Length: 122
Length: 111
View 1 (cartoon, rainbow over the protein chains, first blue to last red):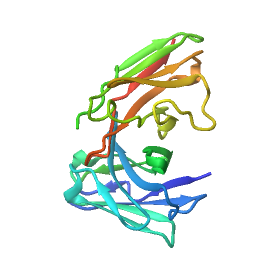
View 2 (view 1 turned 90 degrees about the horizontal axis):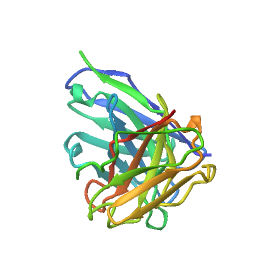
View 3 (view 1 turned 60 degrees about the vertical axis):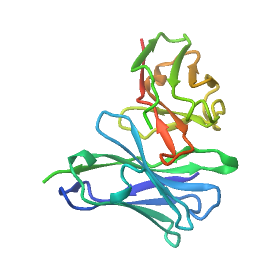
């Protein structure tokens, strides 16, 4: 059973960089057919896809966040990470990491982390 | 890419069946059989309920079913149970730079 767990600071100052890590267990992040994604949910709102990364390091970002976003992967530790720079209060949200199942041309999020609330405030 | 359109809320009594709609465009829902549905209980992570329009992951009750017609996908829940009370989100692959688009979510209340 694949499990994902987010970790990182729960409070970030405005204009600073939000950094989160997702640790994958129960499966290898280097398995083909899967992308590793970040999704966020603003308080009381819907879901927003942030971006994803393949184990090779190839990335794909939401155009609305692309200029501030970096997603990286460390296959040796089975982790992938998110960095979002120049944050504002609008970046306050619960951040989820999730696995994208891409087998046979599919595209759905089959495993999710529990989510972590990140608040941007001074 | 605009969000998919879902009703804000639906309700039903235990044992009843109900359907949640998810309307997109010919660029997302209408173009790909890659609609998925997620159930989210308060304070919890979303859970995959349906993928590729109508497929159920292992462990998901067969009371949940999905379908699609044109630009609209639907999630049907039969034999409503109290535990089904949650927010449901649809999601469609877009084939564009936005990768996927989510619906705004539908709060299901079991009366």
